[in-house]
Image (cartoon, rainbow, N blue to C red; front, side):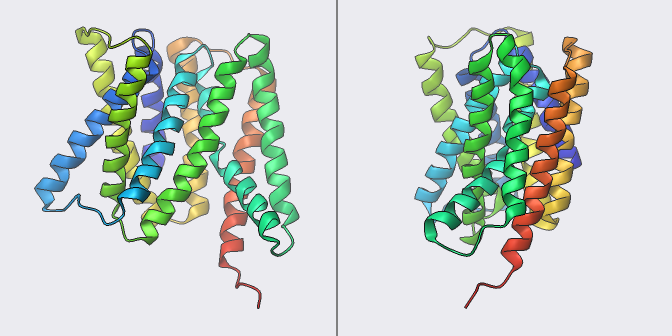
Length: 287
């Protein structure tokens, strides 16, 4: 998980650099194309199969996952600091806690744990602190895109869990997500005015985005398969620290004290929400 967090942050650097030339749709398409080819060759070399019994579930996971990815790349490619864009995307744990609360209220289940509500409130206070300096820079839409990417990513993660319970292996989940990214990314690129020509520098950046994202995604999937949720969540958030460091070194980004406080709140809320969800899931259902 630590390696995946580092590679995702490094991917963010490449996305930000590639965004100077390519639109978000193009970057999503090329990133996903590398993933499709990588996974297909890897599966073939190991004698695995890409045939699935649940194509509809994969289609839904790919749809929400690719929308989240496109919004995230759009936020990274804007003038938002890299750490800010990554933090807003990593709000997914807080969104999942909010979905859990909403589900409990709608279903009329047991009393909602007050600690879970507190983590959600803390997370959104963190968002307000992160976005307040962003709004002052006339980048509200970019900030909202990053926030939306985290919310939709939460839906994608829930679908990944459902696919795992259905017996789908990790590589198949990643493959169909990447295949969906190729199709949706190409459609977005056409809507944004078509495809951009390449030079060696641009092609190298797109290849780097695809390789870093695919390897990081496989590492993260493996970490969730063999690790514990709290440790994985904690290490996952180190990606924000890496992104902050890369933003300062590569792009000379300055993050205000208010934004840093917001990042700390969001990270703490995300880790706490993950721990509380794990404890609630382990509790026996009331008779």
